[in-house]
Image: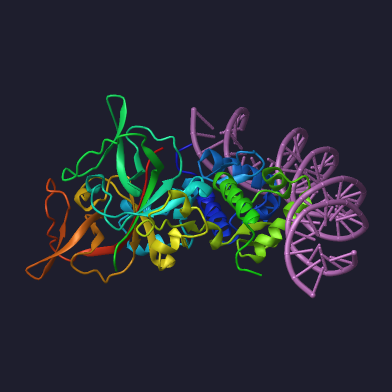
Length: 199
Length: 199
DNA sequence: TTGACAGGTGTCCGTCGGGACACTACCATG
DNA sequence: CATGGTAGTGTCCCGACGGACACCTGTCAA
């Protein structure tokens, strides 16, 4: 049981990924059998268990179906660093798309994209023009990067704690720490970041 | 028929999205009924048809299940700069929708996600653990951030020009500039960046 | 007032998907 | 050569998922 699944399962996984790219779901055991050339559903079932222990699929929260894990969407580049061959091998048979959206968003109905203005968070690697993924929740804790509402404007800062009171710390020495007077209104917590480079 | 679905369906769609974020699948009609508070499966079925004609879900190629469309993944984009009123207006109906994947990926077949190792690009706001969106192309120019292949390993650097030769500049004073001897092999150009914050 | 339609309820039924289990084929490996 | 674990076959059965259909109810317009 090397961490590496058998080369046959590698191929099976590839076909599963292709199917998923089309249908956005793990197929039924019967269809898996068709896809892989199995004559029996049970083989498909066992394959799913193998892929589960390899970390590519898991049961849904309701335990009524299979779902892909993040590993399922991994793009094949770990191989690349190792192998010395031409870079084109990476293209392999893979055509699927890593769904960035699913990587970043946990609760869609509470999630908003907010564009970043200014460079007050530059030391946290958040630049002007970036988009932050904001999850609307009050449950922010010290150390989180939050979108707060100060003077009726959005502001992006790191939430800190000072003498039992929340403060807003910019990640840029050129900006002052904000110590709110009364209530501090938190709009949401930053859970992700997206940047596009001009090209 | 306004292109806008009823406000009730808006709410239903939100719950469907939340469910999908967890289970990576459109739930069964029965579970939809539970989620939405329907007493009958048929209501769930009709809801699905409504969402289909609104363009949020469609049938799988095998026509044996429902799958989300790209529109299903659209997110609200907060219109921060303009707005001065209460923060809740964003929720309203305003704010355009947008799709992270489409925002970052232009040519899916040429695009690869590459995880970032190390902090050699920290001053460019690229941290260890980030994912960069890499477009495979040879057409890199000075100033681009590129993934190059040096000593059979991927390395992420800024492409620079020095005396007519390409060099690889790290964005971290602790690392040395790389001046490749022979041919410099460019794997691709970084066109985007994705980061997820633990939470 | 009266339709007409959209959204929702209640119920029946066929079938398909998956669990369980016994069995076979094929390596590896000592 | 024996042994054992892994991959795959064949078969049975049950539950639930979804299709179909009749019916109810609020709302809005003519």
